[in-house]
Image 1 (tube, rainbow, N blue to C red):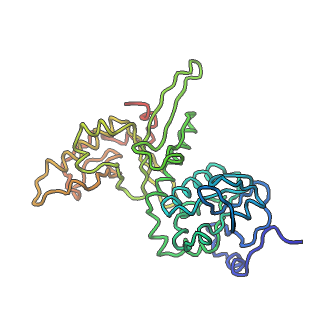
Image 2 (cartoon, rainbow, N blue to C red; image 1 turned 90 degrees about the horizontal axis):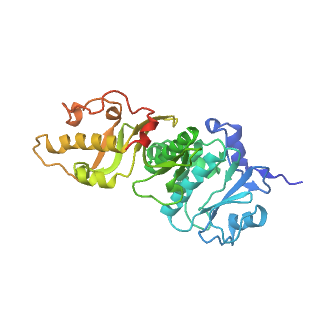
Image 3 (spheres, rainbow, N blue to C red; image 1 turned 180 degrees about the horizontal axis):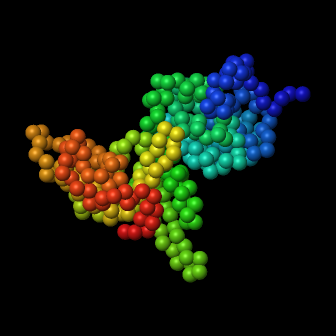
Length: 336
């Protein structure tokens, strides 16, 4: 009787030598003939869902993949479109990350997507799965693990902004739901929605009156957070009032993705950003003019209530929000 799953000799060697112990040795076996309960076969598809060959055809014949469905859960399989370019593929992988994280009861066996008919190499695709590799319910092919455990590659992708952003957004959604509010990630449905990452709704169960909040999430492992504005824009109060749609949640991640949250209401964010960069851009004498197209950032220390740092030319800047008042201040999302 054939086994439901079989490893190659090389895969068995990696398992025997425990080379992926810190990742629970989660290697997708090369030979999969059957899926158990709550096990999901993850394969590469195309946006039209034409499952005509390779793993896609196998998924349609064996695991409930649906002709014409190019992405998402279908039967005991999950499709990731891979034929529409790397940017679109990375967006689809990000959506898969959010789905896998939200469905811990499923075990996902990712095949070497895009490395067959699509024609890509593991070195091009595996880095997209860097953050996914830390999910304990996701198995990856050995070809991906070889890339992800390469120290040079790991260093290169640790600060990958898109995946770090995906982690931050999903963590914020989870925190909001824990508080009894309705929350959804806009970017799971709309690619790079301008100025909004998360929508949160608070309802009064008695009157059904509701309040909504349009939240921008910025996640980093370092200490300098992007704001989405240039230096020029950050000193234009009229533009800030027009473009900032709601509160900001800054997510500071350590190397294990443990978060600290700093929440600023819309008006608090505008005041801090403007007062800081008005001083930096307009009130400090320089020999050479600033490049005002550079991005405007906020240092973690400023979010924690500290004053300006001399090393950044901000000696004398008094933080308008002293004290660590933003840390876990979730009620700020309901303030203007």
